[in-house]
Length: 153
Image (cartoon, rainbow, N blue to C red; front, side, top):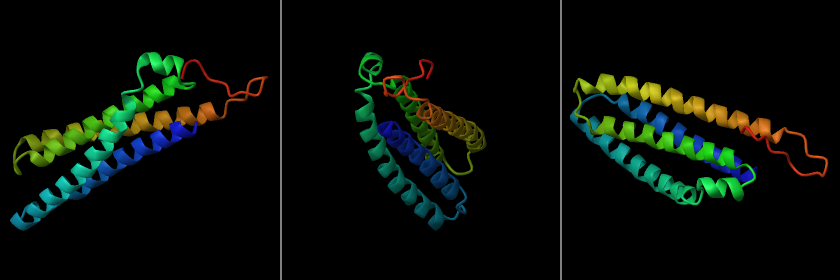
């Protein structure tokens, strides 16, 4: 359960960081100096984000469907974390593409709408995951004193 919470918290921090940084930087006034600073700020953030995402992906490689079924007590929850992290990565890629699109491009408005939908979806998925972890944690222990697992996690 501790590992689930740690990974869930890490995915949550990744989602929150990319959303907050995107929201802050997209508001930058389109002056030449401000845009240069924005580009640098995004690149610095993006590089850090990708580094952590890559480290998480290294853990996820071990989480095969077979191993999650046989080696992890809460395998379905680990799969949900892996899925949430994948969606966070897609959201971050959308943010990155936005900042690589020319300012004033008609594509930006469409991208903003898609990013808004993806952001809401990522947040909803994360909230559902956290809720499921909390529900699972509250399950009563089995008669032999071991934690129970809900089969429909």
